[in-house]
Length: 326
Figure (cartoon, rainbow, N blue to C red):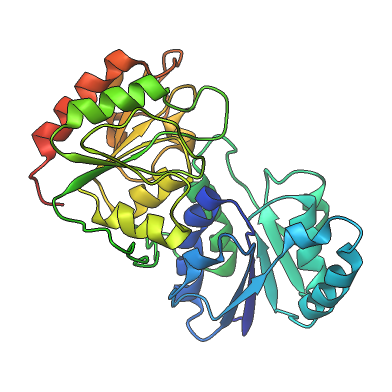
């Protein structure tokens, strides 16, 4: 099969966009001359900056489609979307609105996943059969196979280099901490964050996240919460000597660009939503293991919250690997 134009539908969210990158890279390899357009929301579009697998970004301004003035924004967007007319569209989002975007685009063929929801599968011409319990990267790669793509590793995660922060020196080396995530029980407590900073001393700990935290200051802590753009966050992750993150979008960025990662999973299953990097480390239920050590048929113990006493073993692991090269 040969396609001249391909539409990728994956508007959000942060982690899901990262997970889709290898599938789109595989589609590009299978169709090097095709024009590939990606439908994405404005807040995550910077992740595609400089991505050579993408020819065009089609913004889906979802927030503008709410309220009394929605029609003035929606109608022009519908007309622009209708003009795309790709040969084929791939719905990686798997929701009713993403399937409707595919139909509105005027594509001749719309492909999707077997675990898609909200009746979206009714719109698909072909469906990629996937295990809904498998990792998102694996599921999305199955969808790329409908385009004739080969999904042999190593997989590409073409993320941008990011934007340096003004007046921030990456030296001396620092540990990046992302301690807060949406979802009940995922975040670290303020006490655990403060203990972590003290345990890292004299090494710097740079704390990042969308929500502003109110922490007791420490000599080695640099609080940048609610102060960085998405591309500045990418730059910090690349520059960090080590990243420690709860289960979140930034954790998936770190897994894509570095093996110096400890992902904190309280209640979630890392085999399904963890870092797609066999060298990454996982904290779960008080135990530290490399991602490669988890087997598909293993029954995981019941998860629990991250406690202040869990800081010490994480610091021991970081200390052992501090000076090792990637």
